[in-house]
Each structure stands twice: as C-alpha cells, then as structure tokens.
Image (cartoon, rainbow, N blue to C red):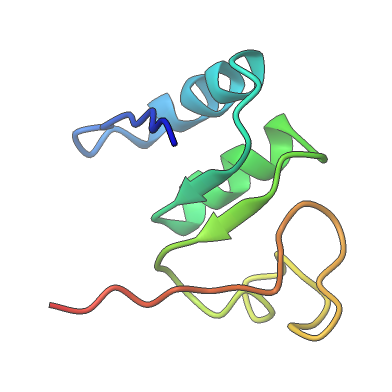
Length: 83
C-alpha cells in the first residue's frame, strides 16, 4: 500500500488542486477530512471512492441520498476520528 497525502495548512482553496492531482495520479481512494475537501473530491471525480474521515453527516450535508444507498463515488462509510 502506498499513501499520498497533502496538507492545506488551513487554506481551503488548495483542496480542488489536491483533488485534481489525486485524480491525475490515478489514486485508488481519496480520504477527505473536511466537508470542503469532500466537495472538492466529488467535483474532481465520479469514479474514485471518497471516504469521509470526519465532518458532518453526509446525508445532511447533501453528499449522498442515504447511507444505505449513497450512489456516486462516496461509499456508505464514514469514519469518526477520536482522540
């Protein structure tokens, strides 16, 4: 397994470029930690799976129709990061 990661240092405007780069690299999966990062990944690809590592409820945020049948590239998986 190989991992590529990017840090935005709080600059959300970088997320779209990061997502586009992951698409160009033909990444197998994108893990997004914020809702803005999820949205950037969704706009960049419809085929690479996107895992929400944190953020809001994906249904409430409008990212998926339901957790049972999310559709698109966002699988029915949401991870909660805990200290």
